[in-house]
Every structure is written in C-alpha cells, then in structure tokens.
Length: 100
Image (cartoon, rainbow, N blue to C red):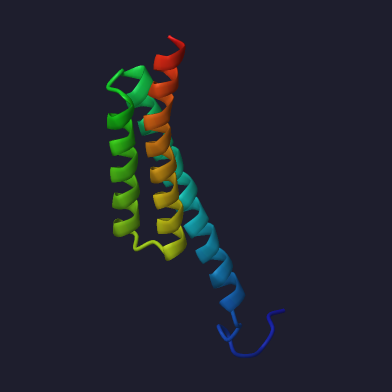
C-alpha cells in the first residue's frame, strides 16, 4: 500500500552534486581523449608534423573550455599540457639531431 504524505519533498542536493561531478569528469575525460587522438593522428598517422597536432590539441581544448564554460582547474590543466607538449616539441628534435 502506498504511503501517504507529500511527494517530491526529498532533498536531492547530494544526488545533484554527484551527477554534476559525473558529467564534468566525463566531459574532461572525453575532451582529453579527443585531444590526444587528434594530436597523435595528425603527428604520426597522417604525418602533418608535431606542430599541426599540437595546434589541433590546443584548438580542441579551447573549444571545449569556452563551449562548456569549464572551470579554472580545467584551464590550468590545459595550459600545463600545452606548455609541456610545446617544450617537448622543441626538445625532442634537438636530441634527435644530436643522435642522428
């Protein structure tokens, strides 16, 4: 038998926060996968070079960040990846030239 009482009065704040966290983490993971796939495909599979892959990585990151109004933590992670990948793109050819 159904309980009598007011329906829809349950506090769902915890569930809302959990679902928001799930959506945000899914968006982060999905965008990072798309960025890395674009970087690796353009750099190695297609052969356009590292900088074209890096540019696609940056453009996708900016597009997701602006399009979904991502938090400051997202932007900090993106900028750190851009800088590290850029430094790697400068250092690796120097070592390759020294070895080869």
